Every structure is written in structure tokens, then in C-alpha cells.
Amino acid sequence: MGKIKIYRDVAKLKSIEMFYFDTKTEGPTILCLHGRWGRAETWYDFIQHYGKQYRVIAPDQRGHGLSSKPISKYTAEEMAEDIIELLKFLNIDSVILVGHSMGGRIAGYLTSLYPEYVKALAILDRSASGLPKPNMVSLEEIPTCDPLTNDWSLPFSSLSEARKFIQQVTDSDLSYQYFMNSLYETVEGYKMRFSSQAIAAGIYNDEDWFHILPSIKCPVLLIRAKCHEGIPDEDFIKMQSLISNCVAGEMSHPDHNVHLGNKEEFYEYFDDFLKRR
Image (tube, rainbow, N blue to C red; front, side, top):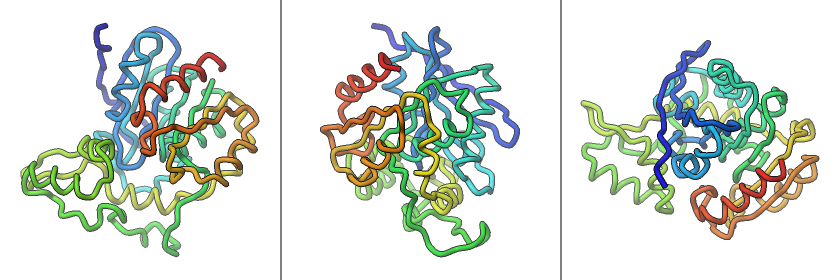
């Protein structure tokens, strides 16, 4: 079986330029949203798996990868609007929406705010609970560096140093590769393609979003990892109770990257979801 060709392009939107993958294949469109610190690259295997039957699009969201990184609040509403602008730019009127982690939150908001654009929604290992944050009151008070990479010795002086350090601070091969996807070389050394300000602002503005779930009426697939860190038991039950048309599942693999930890198992869940929608 031949590989699906991935076209790379940049959409010039109202407030940002957005880099994206696009198979440009026939069929319904699946739009994939990566998690915090991530890139479109995380969806490569997913694209290869579904690209013959579906048109699959995966952007680098604002603050990440090759897309613009403006100083802004990075709220879910703001980032959802970016995706709507991308769909309008591509003349796409409806999608099957898939969001992992932070992308799941944005996908949830997009579906709630713009239901006419979403035929079905998959939320991957993301609770509707907000993230803990310091007591700050304004954008100006948000740190310019996110809590995870604040102590990283950036830029790295060599590729070997970068590899060794990222291996030490990540807890799995999948997490290691997730961050390596954002590594790039500059004249100063090796840096990461995500904006630390964007990450910090996104964390600060990551509030509970249980209240929007009842407004989501399309079919929803809710998947969590075996470790339950992404969606604790109480949140998993509550989210299902608030979403009227929800199918939920738990992966046998503990990795937060549920679409990569056990691909065959995930694709069984997703294939069944596609048949039900």
C-alpha cells in the first residue's frame, strides 16, 4: 500500500498565518488538533491510516510549530476561531473533528460555538476540568515561559545534548518524539518551535468547561488512557453524563498519546465511531 501524500501549506488568516498538513484526498474531512507543545506531525500515522478514505487536515495551532506566535491570551475561544477561519479559507463547511489533550478542549469549544461545522467530535484524553494556575489577574502578569520548559537549558548547544536532555525529562518514547518534533536548529543552537508565552497563557486561561458539554449534540467519542491522569474517574463519568450522544472508551496503554500508544486498539475505537456517526 502506497503512502498518502501530505501537502504542506500556510493559510493567511485574519490574525495569524497557520501552517497545516492536508491530504487533499476525496471523502469527508477529518480535522485533527494537536495537544499543548505539539505539532501537526503527531497525526502522521493517523493520516496514513485514514487518508485514502478521508481528506485529513492537521494544522500547527497558533503559538506552535510553523504557525504564528502572537502575544495573546490563547483562550479556547480564540483558538477555535482560528480553526473556523482555516475551514473558511479552505472552503470546507463541515468536518469530523478530533482533538488530543489541549486540542480536545479547543475541539469541544469549537463544536459548542460553531455546531454547524462539526458532524462528529472525538476528544482524546482531555478532561473538562481546568488546569491549576497561580493567582494572577492580567495578561501582563503571565510568565513568558511555561512551567514545563522554564528550566530547560535552551538553546541546546548540540543535537546530541538536546536528545539526551529531552530523553531525561520525558517519561516515554512517545513523549520524547512529541518534543523532538518541535526541535530545530538556529545560529544560536537548538530551540523549540512552540512559544513559551503561548503555552503559559494557554495554561493560565485553561478553565473548567463542563458547562459547554450539554450544548454538544453531535456524536462524541471520548477516549482516555489507562493511567487516568488525563481524565480522572470522576471527570470521565461527569463528561459522559453531560454529553447526550457520547461513546466512551479506555485504552489498555497508559500513555497520554492515546492515538499512538496502541494504534491498532485506537483505530478499532475510531473505526467503530465513524460507523456510528
